[in-house]
Length: 394
Image 1: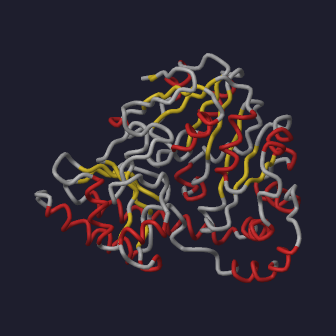
Image 2: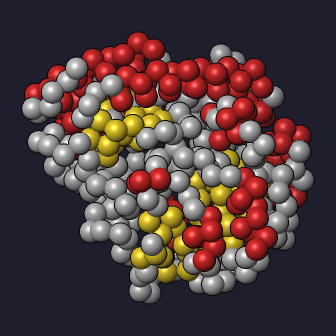
Image 3: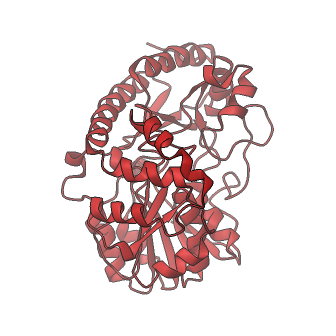
């Protein structure tokens, strides 16, 4: 189902979750548009930030690699100088790690910076966004003054992307934004299918956000792999090192784009946006394959355990995500996800209410996969909240 908008299209499916429209948060005031606003969440909980158990931000539960502090200290003197505006060493490391041409690599201050820039440089008149998905796709498009059309993913299909349906909505002159795996649903769309969509619709642009793909086990990806190696003239693939290497305070991401688009995109980004420490950490991170493999294995097992524990509560439906987070729906009743978040926050736990995602409402929430004992505490605290709302728990 496609939901169209007018010029500068602001309206998504339903009155809740318009791009850039703040939903009501745990305190009843304007809410946080993203997870992980640790200081504001801790303030609302009435505890120091270090005491908050934050399930709202989907960051690697293993934390930063053990070498990170040493790398930062080794390069601390670099802050006396401007960082390399071309991120030359980091671009070469990305090229070597993923086997892509350095001419096609564009580095940003997190992939969010690149998402914000793309609608301003792509030769498109509108965007088509399957929802629910990451809210900043629509925010970026709207801020660029373009129209937005939404196509609603079906809950009955676990919010899986129907590529044939999307292809039927393409007229040319638009950009399609797809998360792989999608945020907040965790669903993984076929890489060959997306590559085929780009090939079949050369007058449309396909932006595939693989920010969480490194958390997906290789056997789960089967033959799909990644789209980084697909060189289509209308395909852009985004990656984030922020989430995988647990460095949200440093910010680091990149895009692999057609070679003729790369110079324009680089000129659109703010000069020196990637600081010297982030560049040095990125070079080291791309060489640490063992950390990536350990993270995948850890997340896969803990996601399975957390999903089973949540699904054992009859008030909750857990969607079969493949990333380091899970989308959960609360059954109809006096306690919805908003109320659950309020009560958990009083217990020092933050979850991500998903009512500002187009296509979702106040019954949906997302939780990050964390460490064993932290996941156990989440389950322990959720049970009495649901029970107090009149839900019979086993």
